[in-house]
Image (cartoon, rainbow, N blue to C red; front, top):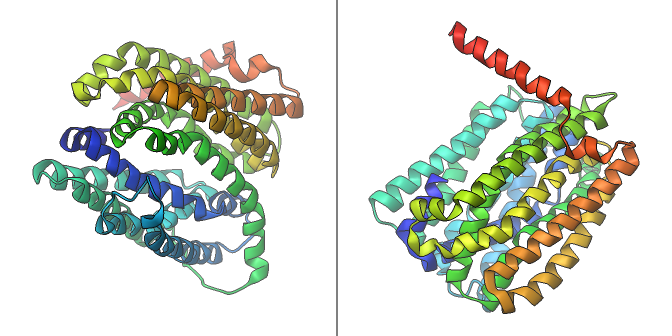
Length: 412
């Protein structure tokens, strides 16, 4: 968040929009991960393969897929009219250099979570964030760098973190590189279903930015991205829960559906409360943090926020289906949401600008969440109120953990 504020203030809306388009290209190519991340978690958690071989597969897949996609895109993007043609080639080259290392960090994180190495996974993520912030402070804030310096900060933070993670946080596992199709095939088979989900979710969350650039300007992209970035900070809670939920469910023999319902209703309650507070403070917060030139982002935030709340359901329920190897339910729900999102944005953006984009995307997120909930309730025979509304037992858990925290503080 701090890095985003520095970038917004130093670059201004237009240059911030150009930097956002570079990052958008990197995120777009992340679709080339082929769903291998969830497959790595699944098979690591199920202990169906030697972990040294899995780690070797992680490294080889990241370098081959990430590097190949980066090279192809670098030679293709200048011919994609109206989107990246204004981005200098050297700036785009620096951004694309992060892709194989970004692939590795994603796969490596999933590998760690498959072993339930939550602390090690969090440390690696923290290193990446701290490194990025330090680079932004030095290269952008202190040295008055612009888009090129910001892109260097992005790539450098990912590259450094990848090497540090592999050297110090692989939990004693030595990578083994073997060419064995029978070993690799299950990863791609499981990953294909996860890949379909990843593509549709990415398009649902980022299609609006692509269409805003098509219909409007880079400045509008900057305004809208600020609103989306602020709202998506609320996902820190359900993303953290969902991140740990899949490997946890893989170890559970029973009551996994009840556990998922508990995580979902508590996540939904927390996000709803935070969303209400954010809406009330949005204009003041954006003006204070990003500056008055970014105040148009506040109106877009009002349109985006309720879709972010609805997406909480997807982030929690989807890992439950993944733990049962039933991702087709998530694919159906997200596909319906994508069709609504595309149609809504095509209609709303030319008429209502970035506010229309937020409304269309939010409506699609709500429909996706409703469909996914319907599948989950029907499959697991759990009442809707148990998935969305906290119960007395949850309050007891909050009090119990609060007492444990107070006792810990008192002892120390």
